[in-house]
Amino acid sequence: MFAPGTAVRVKDDWPETRGPVHIRTPHYLRGMQGVVVRHLGSFRNPEDLAFARPAPLRALYHVRFDQPSVWHEGRAGDELQVEIFEHWLEQA
Amino acid sequence: MTPPAAGVRIAGMDKDTPHATHDLGGVAKFMCEAVDTAPHALTDFDKEVDAIRGILGAKGIMTVDELRRGIEAIPEADYHRLSYYRRWIRSIADILVQKGVVTEAELRSALEAG
Image 1 (cartoon, one colour):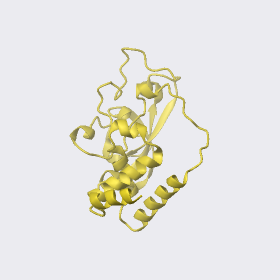
Image 2 (cartoon, one colour; image 1 turned 45 degrees about the vertical axis):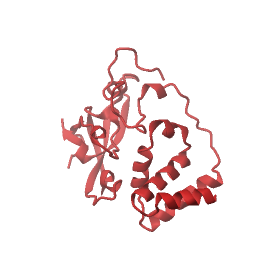
Image 3 (spheres, helix red, strand yellow; image 1 turned 90 degrees about the vertical axis):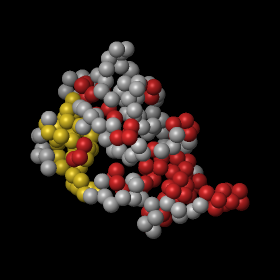
C-alpha cells in the first residue's frame, strides 16, 4: 500500500503490444512521476474482469501529476489527477 | 487547445506510441476538435442496447468490463464511424459469440429476419 504523499512512477509498460488487453492506465502517463493523493478503495482488477478471469482485489489510488510536465502546456501549478491501480505504480 | 510544437516529445504521445484506439488522451489529431457538449436525446435503439447490456449483466452473462474490452477491440476505422451505442452492440455481439452464448449463424439469421 502507498501512503498519501508517496512519490510514485507509473510503469513504462506497454501490454498493448503483447496481445489483447483491457487497460485503465492512460498511455500518456506511462513512465511519468506523480504523488499519491489517497487510496480510493480496493476493487477487482478490471484487466482480468474484462476477460472473465478470476480477478484479485487491487488497491486503486488517486495520483496527482504536474500537468505541464505531462501535456507540455498549462500554467505552473496546474495538476492532473488520475485513478491508477497499485500494480501500475512503483515507488519513485 | 494548441497541439504540441514540432520536436517537443511528450511521453507516450509519439506518433509511433502503440496506444489503443480508445486511449485518445493527448493524441494530437483529436486535440483541436471541439467537444459537443449539447444534450442529445437517446433513440429507441440506444435504450434497447442499454437494456440488453443491463439484462446480460444482471444474469451474470457479461460484465461491463467485458463490454469495454469488446469496444476497445473494434478496428480503428469502425470505432470512429460507429455511434456510442453501436459500439456497444458490436461489442455485445462479439463477446456473446466468443463466449458461445450465441453462434454466428444464429446472429446472422436473426439479422436477416429483421
